[in-house]
Image (cartoon, rainbow, N blue to C red; front, side, top):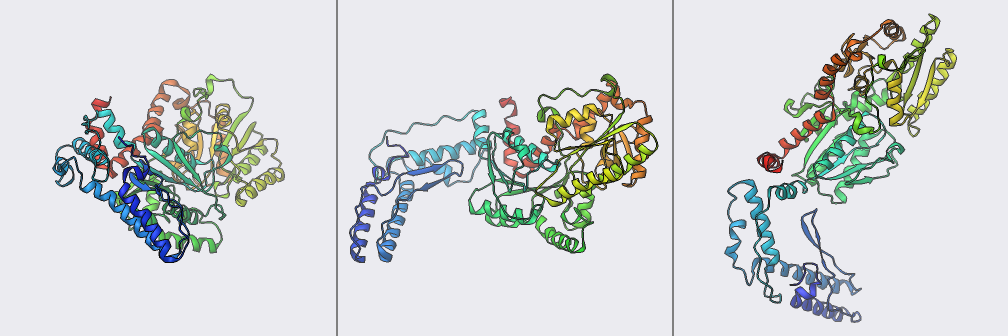
Length: 562
């Protein structure tokens, strides 16, 4: 039997000879010298299983002139038609043998229909035609097992993640969690991004097709970057089944236009026009204009996930035309064990060696909106009052973004001007292991951004059994329980933060975190709302809603596949 990847001349000698004749005739008519015609002008058929189509690889065409090229193109079309003739008029297998799978409407279970389609395609690819040499009889295909059926169905799901600028923040960790979850489900995953920070260079992303598209655009301009990534997706003909987008919906119309059957899931960390409301008026005008346009773009998405109830309320306020049924609250995941395999188990403050002074730790990006300046102001007030303490300012510094670099330098200058360099230490861009080591060493955590979209730091502090001080607004107000797992301040000011820090210094213990029995109750709440397992369950629920056939087959075969 001739292989499906054998030369085309061996499979279609008549059409190949016709093609060769057309080349010679066209060369003669156009006056070009007669080319050396080989018996096989086609190299081979390349079967792309992921794209589920058959592509013909053409050889380099001779320089035959305009008429010759047109004649050669017609010959290629004739050659393509011979492939269709082979499938439509088989010689040795009657058409009625596979007509139930092609001509009648499907009936029966989804597994049976899938098996029928597989068997019909196998029949079409194995039957002979008048253009082929005789072949061996067809061997019947046995029905697939449940495990094979699930594998055949799931592995064909192609998920594309569009996330510009992979730094080391909460949204970037959420993207990594999405990627690894889709890979664990057996999907084909393609990740499109404009840059990847050095922090992630040593991380392994097995089974992920990473496309780092270098773009000379302004850092943080997610609107333009997502447009460019959308065009990259379309021009490279990647053919996704599901596209997950965040930061900006600017690429959604292009994706929906090119791939109408593709589903789009948007994960909203915060509405674009509310991200930086305190900047100068031109930027606010530009951001508001983009927000008005994005309301129409979001209407083309299939599912919108937001990272907190606060974000959901803000999203509905600025985009009232979006259907409420599209919006789901899905907290970003915090999974210490999977992020840091070598991390020690969370230890209460009373079970570890006591610090000589009370240690506060802030884990946040050095960014103006994070309001780390009030921590320096509060440290100055506490030092004047004679308290013994230490503040550790840890977080990522993004050298490519001027705002981050300048703000980091301003904070350092501020500590010198207020004479608190002895009690305020800077730890720029700590590693993952260093970060959780800082959690274990500190006595309380600080998280000062007002109206924060979600805030992963309070969740990490809860997991590490440390109380945290947050602003009573935004996502952190949902995750921190007053005087149980931390404290809240009404406004981001140095005076209010200093009072909360004094309260933590004087408070001897936090029973909900220091006592093992009560901590287990908080841990159960953590697993339900903020763990990686809960996050993945919400993602699977959304995928099942977008692809009901996949959900039906998975539920039907769950017992057999267990």
